[in-house]
Image (cartoon, rainbow, N blue to C red; front, side, top):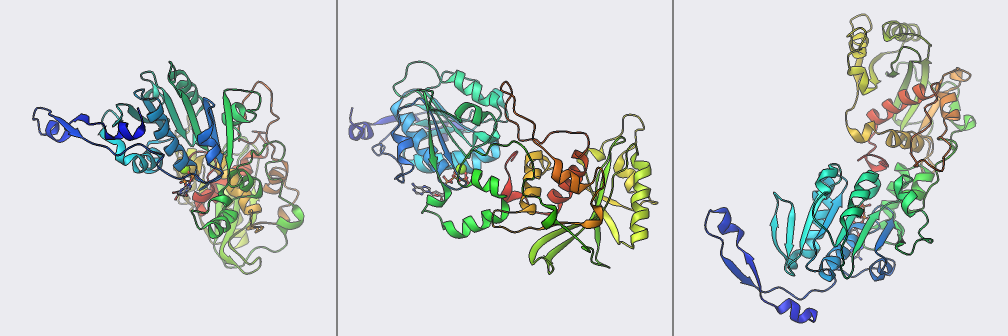
Length: 461
Ligand SMILES: Nc1ncnc2c1ncn2[C@@H]1O[C@H](COP(=O)(O)OP(=O)(O)OP(=O)(O)O)[C@@H](O)[C@H]1O
Ligand SMILES: [Mg+2]
């Protein structure tokens, strides 16, 4: 049947308004416009739509046009595989309703006949159902046989969601497909799609942010350059896979980032603490909304640290207060690990209570936002302060901290990613070396609390 005739076909559906009012459902007849691709793809988006591979990955930069292409292709797949059901999947309910489902409903508006928000499906005028689910609850992905599925931003999903989706899309349908639209990531996405050339079933397509002429691209790229380090800019804007191996902070250089006399006398000082009995770390810093010395906004100067071994918080907190008194620092706020708010199993006392005790006089701050607590996000926030993709540096460390065994300078120089083993998945987490991770963590807590890292999220959202 031609799409013209299909569109003109009279379709019956149940009147939901009547049903809600408790009246007997009545059949209603309606006509729907003929089906046609609901948007005009750019030249670089077109091959994704034209491919006949059953599994297709549209790898794109942020704002490159992944979601719009995914939504349009999902509608096409629902039409081509009618009356088979399909499913839209986004990493969280928030992203689903704010972004992916919204784009789908915007493009598919003429053909959506009914929606059941409780059971989370839409019915298309060609008799197919489209379910929607968020991947943070993998059980919600279980269900009937699907003819197709669309995963938007699977870089934030666990591999389990991919496995479940793969198992659900089955049966004989004309264009049985799974489509994925995402910025690249070095986790399971890389393992599955890093090299599609060997696999007949899979194809990957590349679109770049810079080629999206539908947005005001130059100011957008300038803003992204400020939020990302060079390596992550290549990954999230140019959509290249960045192999994370070796140094975690490769652009850190003692020649650039370690300087004399960074302290500004009389200016408030902030503290950060990674508590722990064996290897606690604390540091002191000043933050300048505009730094006249380095001519950058939001510049952070680390001006002190204490990293003693085998020292409980009950001893470290007075040591920190004494250093403040000796150095004449006006210091109250201390950024801590959110775990510092938990009671110790041995003593039943919380680290924050010790810090805030009247003798120590700190006020602790921490964030429970999962995006800020996510380690790869925090590491990227440090990296973009060391050197953002626009070439600006806004993190400096005072030279008198040079040579401290577990100090921040060593931590930034020595932090490594674990060597990749063939049988393990990529993880964007630095090695837990037991030595340098604590100083690095203290700096991370300070940075994610002090600055808006919203634009540079690479891990949890
Ligand atoms: N072919 C197109 N036709 C019309 N508008 C387009 C097209 N491609 C991209 N756009 C527009 O570009 C903007 C970004 O698209 P979209 O949200 O799909 O990108 P994205 O890569 O999913 O972004 P994000 O990384 O934020 O998820 C949107 O306003 C979208 O409407
Ligand atoms: Mg998107």
